[in-house]
Length: 294
Image 1 (tube, helix red, strand yellow):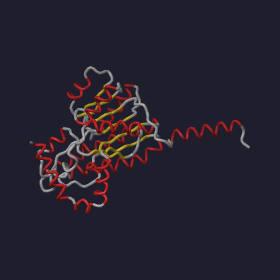
Image 2 (cartoon, rainbow, N blue to C red):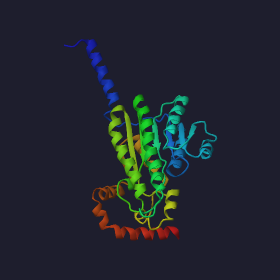
Image 3 (cartoon, rainbow, N blue to C red):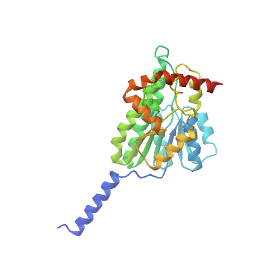
Image 4 (cartoon, rainbow, N blue to C red):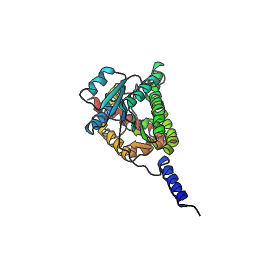
């Protein structure tokens, strides 16, 4: 029979075990959020939301002047200007957090770029353009911040992918490749980090009404499939609401909307099914582009 001292020790071991390997997805109060891509689109809407909630932030962007403007008048914002595809940028983020004396609770990789093009037409420089910002930047940030979160025993990383990271999209092959990479990497490290109390979520939204949508209108041939979805495209606020929900109740993969996510998963698993509907989807996309341009 174990002694009272032994029983206390066993109970202590169980509590430590439950803390290190959480059995339930419990939300955490944000202490410090690192946000990339805050100057426009989804990131800009996230910034406004977090500012309203008075959550301390570290913003990351290439453009120092934009960051300075965004941070103006707010004591809760710090910023790091630099390329997310460079490890030195992320080392500075970690150093900034340490200077603030706050543990990073959340990393949101929202920075992204797109330049439509068919294989025979896009420039070779477009390969690095997509992979560096969309894939390498997200992977570097997740790696270096993820190690910090692992060491502290809690945290949540949210990486923005796309439905184009679930299903092939001709005309956006480089963008799709970068977003497939984000999804695959995120789901892989989610399995690695969960036992340390760190969640990783990959967000896959459909077409969102941001400057990236306006850019795609200039490539009507390449983006037919992009505009083949619902007439009412997502707003940045829709994606932000989904992000706030998953911050409250973490899970590994979120598609927005879930119905289109299911179709994308089917097309990604059985590409031949998508090909059966290609012509009709392209016609729908052509019509949507004409309407938006008029």
